[in-house]
Image (cartoon, rainbow, N blue to C red; front, side, top):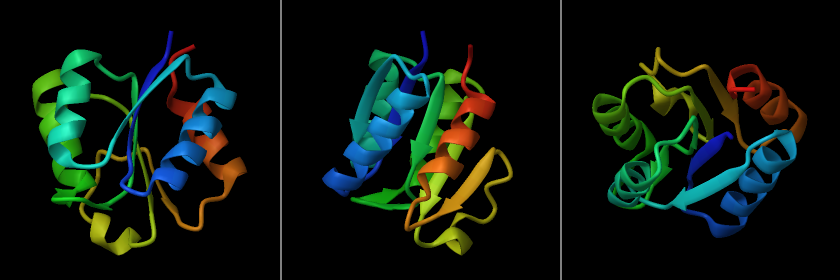
Length: 116
């Protein structure tokens, strides 16, 4: 089972990312639009993979991811963002994909890190 946490504050984009992850093998998805919501979701169900935007409501995706990883240990992270430069340094990220999102690139990056 591969549980995914999507951190994205645009509902339609969150839905698209969720659909891509499900098509690529995710079994369950939680969506959060802010760092507090992301931490609450991770506390309720530890994600196997995090798919995150950088600029989100009340903070940033990297802030949320760092807090989650500090509490729950290493989790693969893929950033999907219109501001990839704002993601530096994100040396823990397995991929930083630009928006507009390319479905094939996201699928490939996701499958490379998702547990079988």
